[in-house]
Amino acid sequence: MDGDMAAGGSGSSYTTQCSLLFEKVNPLVYSLRMPTPPAPTRLTDRKRAAILEAAVAEFRHAGYEATSMDRIAASAGVSKRTVYNHFPSKDELFAHILQQLLARSLSSPDLLYRPDRPLRPQLLELVQQKLQLLHDEAFIDLARVAIAAVIPSPERAQAMFARMGDKEEGLTVWVRAAAADGRLKIEDPQFASMLLQGMIKGFAFWPQITLGQPVLTPAQREQVAQTTTDMFLAYFASA
Image 1 (tube, rainbow, N blue to C red):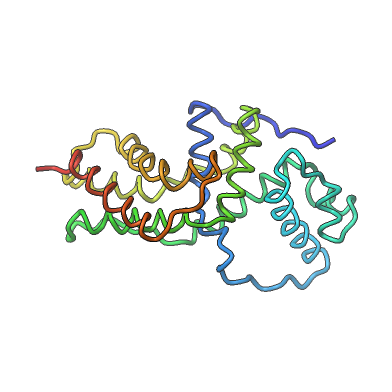
Image 2 (image 1 turned 60 degrees about the vertical axis):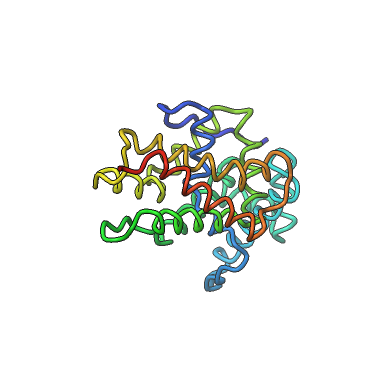
């Protein structure tokens, strides 16, 4: 039987951890349009890559609970023993997938705050980027699987959260910089950023995760981006 991961860090509430878990995984890394990395040359590396590819496909197709190491082994064309040689448990394998995606996402550039530019076009570009990253059905599928896996188990959520590291999300970095420059009236940038992301995800994440709604059309994304930007600045922008 696949073992549970040991409980990890604490400090944030469980629901906040579940939300931040997917803030820290940049959805762009799930995109099927990303360039394919060079093929591994060693046999053991090729097997490991096959296991990870099969695991992602199985988790997307069957969900976390229904996916077994046997199914992953069969899909990857390797023995179950080989799978366990690389990953001691299903929890470890799933957490590794999230860690791998985070590591790749760290190389994607964030849009930095520019004191010489007007606030609205900067924030609008950030919001549009966020909406584009969420416009990925592969990401939605895996996020749904992961949320279903962690909601019944606070210990698993805490452990995954601890593994994800503490890199601050791009929108929060921008909000913090604009507030420090005196152009936003914000005492708590993390709080303001979560409000902003709540408006975005209320249209472009949670309906797709919980209700199975389709990803937004380009026109819908633009409507959300323009309205969210204007509402945020109407409240927080300095006079």
